[in-house]
Length: 222
Image (cartoon, rainbow, N blue to C red; front, side):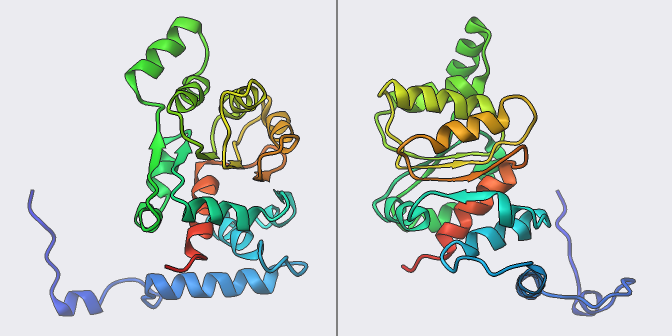
């Protein structure tokens, strides 16, 4: 495949009526706008997470709907520093998480949704692959950080596995999106003893799950 070639002159000119802005400058200005338009001050520890979710979604309602367990940010970062891996329920979330930053601490990101054994088991039992992927994570023998952004069935099965004593998550990011059992699944996670960040209600998504992971990672040193 032929690669694109741009001359210096072509890079400087174009038909756009707006000035060219670097990615870093776009992000900086975006966060300035978010800061100005927030209706009330945020908890300083939680603020970077909330602002990055708003930056990702352009939805200021997350300033109210994101719920944090006690010392949630600190506990999530402690788990990351200790090398905890992250399990997600979509490859989209996996793609969005900054794996290079996570690797600094020895962690990796996993998504079992496309695994052949998960698909076969889900079909055999007529349940979602998301639920089976949580079961597979429990079989791995690791205490993961879970970042659930798409499937409430993943969150429900994770809750059941916790109650059964089959899995002990280090941290749960519970932000699936949808209409059926979504809000209820999030409330159940908030009843467990596992530290969490949860988006109450119907809103969420894989992009939100990845944004929360990245906000936690970007706020760490080393």
